[in-house]
Amino acid sequence: MRYVEGDKQGLLRAASFQDGLEKAGWVAGRNIAVDYLWGMLDSGITERLRQRVPEVIAVNSSIGLREIELAAPEVPIVFIGVSEPVERGFVASLAHPGGNMTGFSHLEPTLGAKWLDLLKQVAPQVTRIAYIYNPNNPGTKVTFQSARAAAEEFSFNLLDTPVRDIAEIEAGIAGIAREPGGALLLPPDPLTTGHRKRIVELAARNRLPLVSALRSFADEGGLLAYGVSIPELFRQAAGYVDRILRGEKPANLPVQGPTRFELVINVKTAKALGLTVPPAPLAAADEVVE
Image (cartoon, rainbow, N blue to C red; front, side):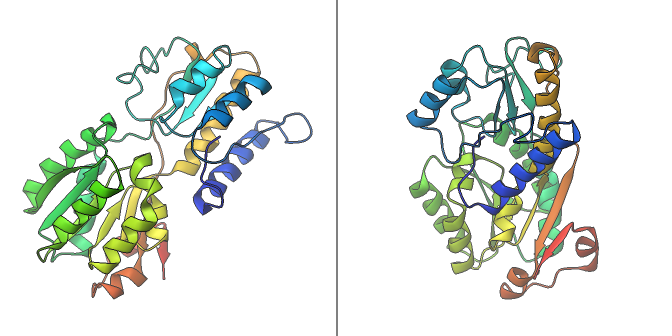
């Protein structure tokens, strides 16, 4: 498993995974041992996999997924939150993965339009949006198409802002902040998630509404987040781990898409930006940060 140590959302994901295992009859310390590996992939983690040789590996990211597969080629893998697994060559097809890998995708193409709809409701003064994304992640391009179509409907100027490192992220934010009416839109990606504290800091400093697919951005000061419930994917992934431990093959377990979504609105940030959140999105929110 891969998390940033001390991260609140990482702990929630681990708890959801454990809950899913327990519901399937697996209790840590009694009939199963779960080894949580925190942090980004490095040689230490791959070497540990070679030494331990687990019965199943669950991975929460596409980064390093191929390296993990090479480090333990005989071990079944359940991935969590990977977009476009067929295009990336992780599986042969969604219905019939083949090979030794399957899992759960967090890609939902219509999210792009939903983000803009929420932004229009909560921050009607916005006219320009920087869509900040990792061009090496094919899933971010899919949601960009949805957002671009919605931008025409809502009269937004959606700026295509690919980034590959923190310097390009900072430059993209500085660019949208030069004129009034700007906002930030971030699809899910490990690159931007890894720099979220800096992104939230710059959004606040430049008084930019920030919309993300991941609730961790809203928890830490972004305006709102709407996207797939990642903890729910972890709970579902535990079900696949259970089935594999009981003898089923990853090749026969279809890759599944998201089924549960969550909306988090940071009212404290809205007030700091001089915004009043309308009743409708507030009523629809799964959580309100005050």
